[in-house]
Amino acid sequence: MKGDTLKKQLSTGAGKGFHFIPEIGEEVLVGFESGNAEKPFVLGTHYNGSETSGYHTSGNDVKAIHTRSGTKIILNDAQGSVFIEDPSGNTWTMDGHGNINVNAPKNMIITAGEDMIINVGKNMSTTVGMNISESAGINKNETIGAMKNTTVAMDMMTIVTGKLTEVIQGDKEIQTEKKYDVNSQNGITYSSDGEVNKHSKKEVKLNSADKSKQD
Image 1 (cartoon, helix red, strand yellow):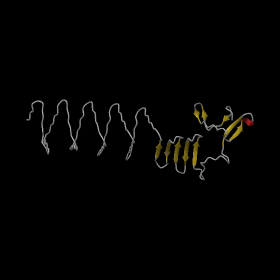
Image 2 (cartoon, helix red, strand yellow):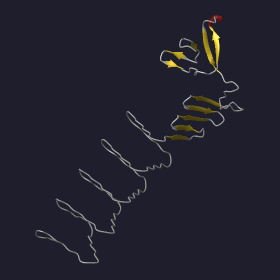
Image 3 (cartoon, one colour):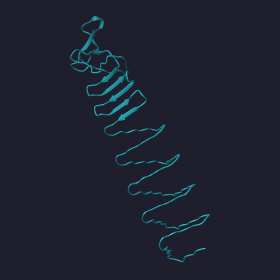
Image 4 (spheres, one colour):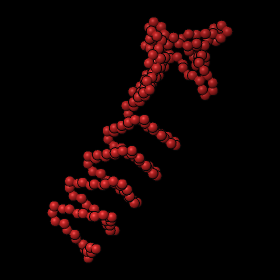
């Protein structure tokens, strides 16, 4: 088929339509404009005894687009499913039962020019093999209806350049198996509407570089 030979498409138009051109060596069905043998056009390609699609089913359930590189779009009417795959192993599966499975052997990037909203009706689980980085240009808000558990296997550091405020309507308990240090460059104030109790199984020392005062 030469470059100027017409190929019939399902839909055409400037900047739109279908673009499926037969590969070299494929068997095609040819028609002629007004029966003129000098004006052939390709009606389409077809399978023969030696070249089969591999997607045939007895119920004609499968419709597929499969390119020579291995890119696939498979529609299965028996399952109600849609399967998309590229040669690198990226896949997108809609199984026809309300589930979607997306797989990327390497990287996945999602970019939203404005807002992005994720709604999960029940549980959400995230597992990362190495590091997680989060960055917010302004504010970050978290609302938890019940308990929040945080487990850190090694060290934990919180750095606040402004003011840190904790408002707790119940009790607060701090427990450490080793040393507990509180350091301030500009004073420490303890205030309670009730009693203040300090208990130690050993000696309690109060050291001051200046005078000490207790009222």
